[in-house]
Image 1 (spheres, one colour):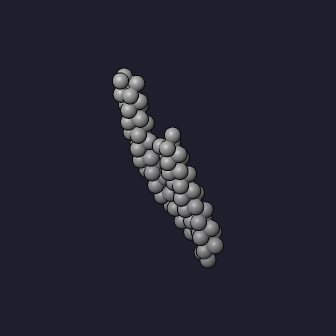
Image 2 (cartoon, rainbow, N blue to C red):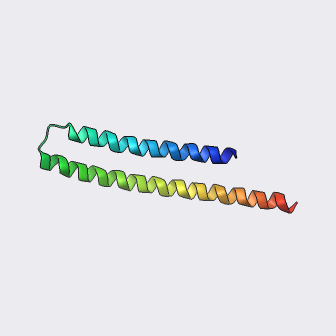
Image 3 (cartoon, one colour):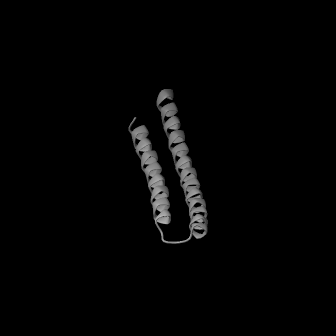
Length: 82
């Protein structure tokens, strides 16, 4: 049960971090004193970078969660067999 709570907290933290980064980058780019074309280009680049980072972090998190779930299942099977 403790593992589920920790895992949920990690997912919430990473989600909040990514959302905050996206919103912060968007506000910073939209308030920058540049031409519309240049700003749109910066937004596209920034969004691509955020997407790549979020994808990488999500894959890392899912790998970690899968490993911990597998450990929990193995532990439960060991206890059940006793």
